[in-house]
Image (cartoon, rainbow, N blue to C red; front, side, top):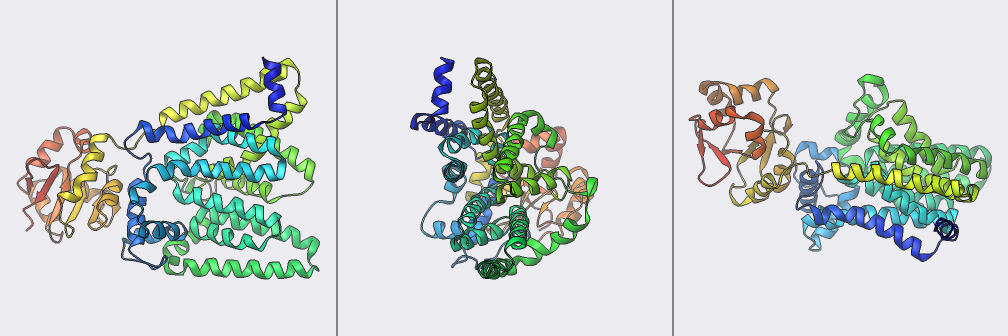
Amino acid sequence: MNATFLSVLKKPTALWGLGFATLLVAKFLWPLFTYDIPLGYDPGIYRYLFLRHAEGFPPFFIGEMDAWAHNHPLGLFFFSTILLRAGLPVDWFLGFIWNLFPIVLIATYAWITSRKEGATTGILVLLVGALSVPLYDGFSAMYWKTFAALLFAIWTFYLLEKKSLLAIVPGILTLVTHNQTGLLFALTVGTWWAIQMIHKRNDPTWRKASLIGGVVLILAALAYLPVWKQAVGDHLLPLLTMRGDDVPAGSFPPVNFYMKMNGLLLLAGVYGCIVSFKKQRRATLWILAVLWSAAFVFLRLFFYRRFFLQLDFFLMPFAAIAIADCWKRLPSFVGEVVLISFIAAQGYLSYQVLLLRQPDIDAETFAIVSSLHTMIPEDALVLTLENKSTTWVRGWLPQNNVAGPGLFSLPWSRDRWEQLLFGTHEEKEALLGLLPGKVYFVLTPLFYSYYGEFADAFIADSCFEKLQDKPLLLVTCAR
């Protein structure tokens, strides 16, 4: 049986490709059929951004939206605006379209790798993508912009290696879709270009190409102009000056977690990098992308945890190269056992992480959030009393002003929120009197579980009217 296994792997067939593709599809479609709620912390954020950008047409016309929303680059919303204006429901982008996107991303990666390294390695990229823990974590967190930018980046790398001017299009899209991936992309391409120019500085073709590259950077900068301060300017000084413990790590699991749960694939990727470099004897775009990603992660630069996703992603074809190389070097029974054990062990770890990644809120809270638009007028201020449901409420009430503890448009300090929640009637009245118009508080199961007996005391205050059969408090004492 093992001999048959190895002989098939050494001569890839459509059956193996289909098998790995099925595993990939099953992994990313599984949450769609398991949960009635989108995964991640960001569905509400993206729902709000998709809808508000779609109100501006043609794309990149900036509609009215919260100040924080201007921190998000515009590239992704160029496409979403067109599709939403064409009639696609916004919730498709939080549902099956999002579930399909990582499948398309890895399938594209596999095709590009097969064109460079052969069918065997390309097929193995499907397997590596299905086993990757950081990739699934990025998916479960709904990193729309990151995944879209990575798709544009690999197309750019492929077309640059083909010396195609078409690389300009995905190159610009990479830069204007996601800040961190765009920065990594610019550093990678810039380093690669500098190396090329050392050897080709007198080549008129490369001089012309360099001029075109400069035009690409200018066009990307122009695309950022409407949101330059929020999306770029505010981040430059921290990026250049912060180091070590002062650096924001980013909302992603710590590096040690991935060393434990994804360590086998990481080791394979490093080994594959060495094999590839020995073979090509030059720093390719793909190797440089790995090196720059690793620099951000291990030197603990700005948002270094987030860059582990890019590090893992750019190591994928090298992990596939490593596995293919092992097939050639370990033909014995022991080698087969090692190979099968490697896949089984990483598969087990990946499965354990998959089970950990569940929706950020419970079904009852989601039902409340998704029905609020039928209960609250569009001119009302809507406040949550815990910060877990706030982003969801923001997405499902795009026309309202929405805020919660530490989030969005209400500039209250922690002390003021505590005064509201635990203070006297007079203190509540003084705070609420500062708020204009109608004000509603959303009562979620999370609120009751967080505050226990204090929740009942808060609701009973005469500043509020509990609306019958609705999870809402209407502020009455400030009107």
